[in-house]
Image (tube, rainbow, N blue to C red; front, side, top):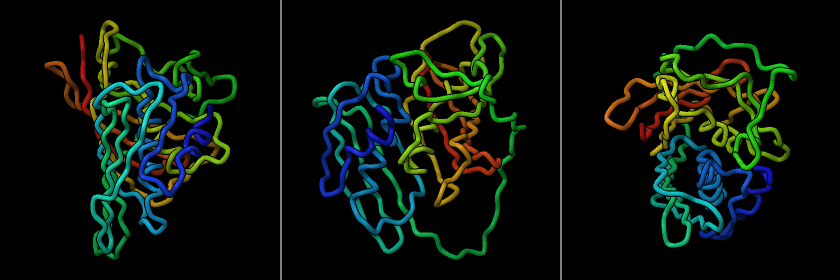
Length: 257
């Protein structure tokens, strides 16, 4: 099932939505985090017709999500310029995803500053260089370039062009969010042998009200700045096809090796 068809099941007029996680969007025993985050955002974004643009999100991956799920969303507070919305996803009685989304109107400011060091962007992969993931794994719905991870390189940074294959009818914000968690944790670039990892949370800020890119391609850049004692912390930035930063974020990752 495509991302747009999944999200189309989340309709306005209710604070509760019942869905089934498609097997082609699983990441091991749980729903891919980019998809669950996009579903939670969709449920939050339709609570009111006049919500401001999305500004920020705090997402906790608190447990596995598969099979039948329920999304519950409600407004925590609505002010003149900002709306805070809670959106959680349950699997049975257990919560698997807990999110707080901040929607905010832009205002005039004397500040206009940016200090985001752009990477050296490789070319967007050509047709013959594109690959997708295996069946029954979420990356089968995506395209990217060469192998994204090689163990034993002792490199704390992972970067790649990435896009969702089927994008008809897809909201640009959902596209951005769903792509945003597609890379393996960058701490895996430091590993000499394969080991289990699991993202525990994801916090991101939008740098634009209207994320746009050409032909669905986003450049994902993730850099670990700490790894030890069973966890890692990484910075993340997403760029569009023109090299413009669209989103910045952080993740905490559990390391089991």
